[in-house]
Image (tube, rainbow, N blue to C red):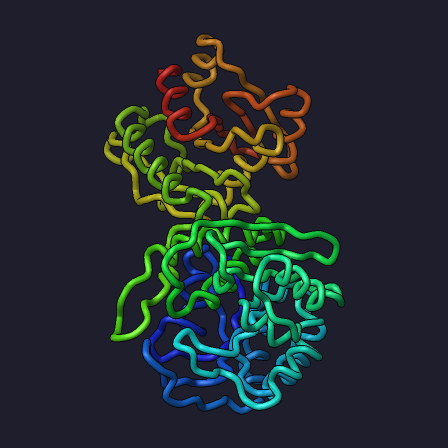
Length: 424
């Protein structure tokens, strides 16, 4: 499981801050660690009270997490005071992982979430050292020192904020325009992201977006793709805001990622139901047959879905042992990623037992196949065989030590079902 760290304040109503970050990162499939900077007594109408956490405790939280976990990305949200911001900047100074800074100053209900001199430390330390800054209009105005009325002003603010190499993602929700136009500046060029304007974003929108971005970076996405996927998700988050109190709506941090993962899980589950009625029990390897389906651009095995518990055979009956989930079957995931390295369309695979039946029938029906045998990494051996073959085959027969197996490869789970039907 990939992990990311949120350094931010606690929101007692659960719509922003640490609470939103945990839910948003989980929606992307990333485990969230936390360092709490302040405790707030707030609801959807107002911020009633703020109690900052001591810098000693902030340091101890950070050390506890970083000494135990392989953290892949970090975000900061509400830092509240200059002293806390200085402490966090010192803690992050020697990091080697992506750092997203959301310069939180005002809550969604309009109350201040910052103490005296925080802005000075943000400008002097946090902005220059972070990899991505995600200000809204007000935050960008305060940090850049200029008023922002339109896209041209937004670009000027980005240039001022990014002059020391920081990438700036300026959110356009508070800028008057027909559609929402966000601006990404990487120090050399601008990218423009335009989306239909929905109702005014509710409580937690900025926290949720920056958490989405951080989680995607933790999964290995490059900055542009992390932002693109995250921006698609926050659009859905705003569209599905919900009511928990008497004031602002809560931005929904638990939406399905925009890379079609819900459809992937559903497709895999339905295809497995069909296969459980088709596959001969002799074709199920010991202990289970693994069946997987990847996202369009998997960054690792965590982006490949598989059946929890696989498919097994008992008393002559083949059954599906669980529903589809991501990141649970590294063996089949590696096979799919190996195939996608040769042909990105080949996103699905199932591992079956090596039987004479399968081998002879695949040849008889004219399906393509390759054989791979080696003592080392079986997937490197398969990759070499695919490159030599010049294409991804319908089936891969492999042998590693005393173990043998067959992978059936396809574009999607339905393609796998069709190929197995052809063999049968």
